[in-house]
Length: 116
Image (cartoon, rainbow, N blue to C red; front, side, top):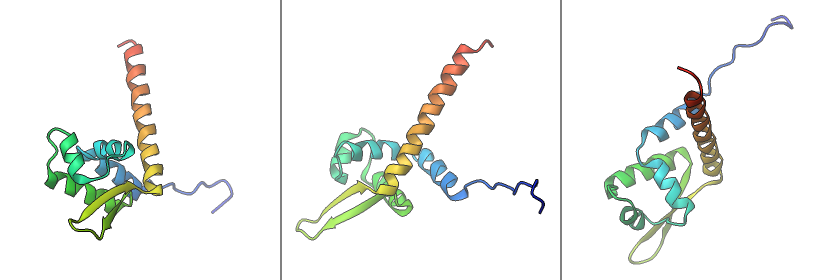
């Protein structure tokens, strides 16, 4: 390889897959918003969001937990109590999602301003 040669840059497959999966999940962004606003118990999440079922929420929470975006905290109480919180990695990941949302807003604004 000569000094003028640039190595092939490969896409970030894992993070791209994560973004795609999160945006593909109808509820993940809503769950992140709930957690950011202090709603961290599953029952309260279901009560706060019309159309969100316990089964769908549990699938969403499990998926985000497997990515390391949120963590589950189980308290040894009777009745059992479970809460979720955003991890430090999750905060970083959500900032990236927020940046993508801002980029989308800029694209939409630019499209409106440009002549057709």
